[in-house]
Figure (cartoon, rainbow, N blue to C red):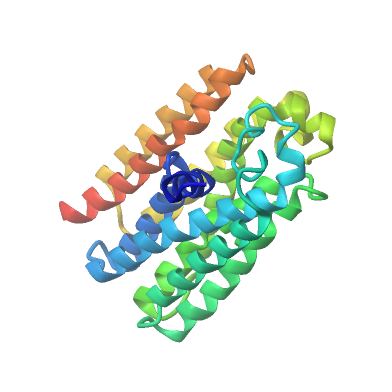
Length: 287
């Protein structure tokens, strides 16, 4: 196989062509950095965490496809993924994931010991997430921890500790992940039922739409509490209002449980996360 063809397959494996996953990790991480630093984060930390987010999300995709390779062929949306389709070998996915994780760890070598220790926990959580779908009724909750671990790491890198606010934000991220990944799971529900994969869309059943909206409310409520305690006011609340409007728009997309609408709602979570971060950053900037 030509080198360029194989490279393109690797990029597909790592979802480089689908940046939504990167953004869903990045917005909470940036929000945490801004809150931890009082609106003035060190730009070297911003660069380290941004690049680390890209690398770890890509590594997570490779491990996820390795773990799900025998399931993905039975799901309409994933049947043509490079590993599932036999275009690359399983060992290649594992090797890529390991290489990306090592490069990501190298980025934080200049940072403090607590940040390094949290990074090891983050790698374990990210690598074990795909297997939670085998037995955990709401694996999206575990995904929220995996996708939000940049929050305690960001606070640790800035302040040398992980305050209570960081854990509240991580919990908010768990609720947000349950919301958006339930929308995602609603797309594959019929296929997942056939192959026995556990998802929140299956667990919530006919209450799936209500559960999604309640999770959005819980996530925004917790973020609002943390921001208010940090002294953020008008622009922060404006950002939350925009995020809440995004969530209400998602309700119009998912209430009929149409596959296309549910997938669109999932992708639009980028704007919800961006609105929250923008509110935080602008409020600090205009003080």
